[in-house]
Length: 150
Length: 211
Image 1 (cartoon, each protein chain N blue to C red):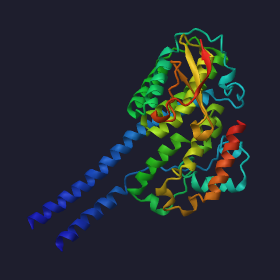
Image 2 (image 1 turned 180 degrees about the horizontal axis):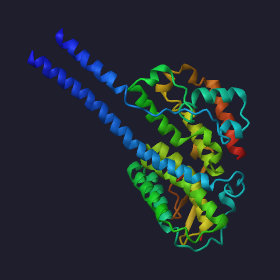
Image 3 (image 1 turned 90 degrees about the horizontal axis):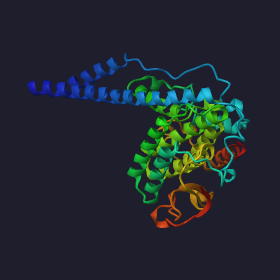
Image 4 (image 1 turned 60 degrees about the horizontal axis):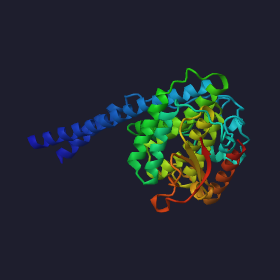
């Protein structure tokens, strides 16, 4: 019994300890003029869907639930966001050349089509981020139109 | 009692060890990411809002007969061909090697002679092509093929822009890209399809000969 207590104590100390290691937050009040929603005429339902499903990792502003402020979850998340933003940052959409916009749209479409995005580890917690089949079709149709108009 | 202590210590060390390892990994990635971001901000300098007509001129209009004879693009085209040939034989690792070679070829390319519009267009093509090459390095083969699709358009535009000394064939496969069709460039006249896997290697036709 004593062993268990000791292990628990050590783990607790480590757990408390790592809370003091700082992580950078992905938060910003400013929506730059280059934002996807500002440069494109995005229908309201699609705006809402993109914001709920994509913007947490693909923009400069993440809506953090409380448990994401706790280590080691925060580290994991920080990594995901970094990677996500490097691939695609909706806030910086208009900084891309048309060539790259097209290529990004193609990737967006194929990722949603194949169900690779949003990540299942994300939708597991954020139920509202999941795409229903109709939503999937709508968003793919709209993104394709945008791609072809460029 | 001693045993208990020892096991507690081991457990604690293991936990700390694990967390530091994952932390390290994260750091490593972040340097990678930084590289990526640098590229992205580089992009900002060269972005412009309504180039439309310039950058998406489709391959068809590209000069069929009067492609410039240039050797400058040769390393880039060679690396592209390396990826293409790897994909025709379903060889993911070889394709990844080609991707690395392509990224290297771009960074070694001397663009000091490029000016004005040509320079701008070159930069746009390269930013896109490099991104696809990087993804080809780290992706499974089906993703490699998706990136190769756009890469092919980029390289085709690059050839139209800067020319080549090589004889190339612009091939088209109507079945690629989920039936939307896609082009690729080949150094040989014979059709060797990089999109459909070795089973459908001969699907496609020559659209145009360059040089």
